[in-house]
Image (cartoon, rainbow, N blue to C red; front, side, top):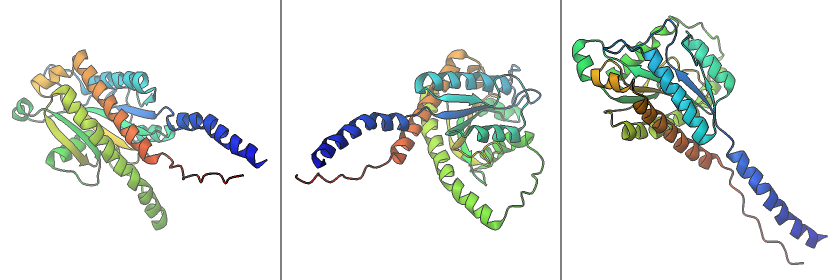
Length: 269
């Protein structure tokens, strides 16, 4: 009987190994969030192009690439020009139990002088405080659609602590996701590198998955605003975002892969 087990165990390992491998490589579930929509136009280009339209176009391209290149299951918070309050975006995302969350936006400057001068890409992850004045301004602009005040949750101190501990790893992975995507965006687009930044974006707060907000460029800049409307440039951005997501998922899966304990050699019969 012992000799038969010695033969059976390696055979079982042979047949089960591909199953374990496929489980580790299951399709990722990703929520893509095109900013604004409906009555919320967002930023406007010098020629009247609206952020809500550019964000949706790029998000749709990102979905296509994620599905085609990664086999991912991609869910959009909106796939047409409709209004969707920020709390509903967060609620929708959490119901999907995603592996990660991507929010797509365009930036803008408020004055004629800064509109003519400021351009470039920024990638954000959540923080209670902004990295700098630029990050604070971006968060304030994107948070303009948020509720003016949040209802008190009334959570116990213990529940708050447990929730905070649960979010620590998610926050760290949000940082990793941002740093995986951002350099690929800069390399693919040739845009000015305005860095990976942190800011208190409402749409990132409460998402129970690694989450980033990508400002794909300054729609208010005459040249960059024009580039953002071009299909070939949008394709570069979508391909770069997909490449960053692919690199991030590979890193996380490698980190989280179960480590097989060493198996002792069978005793001699």
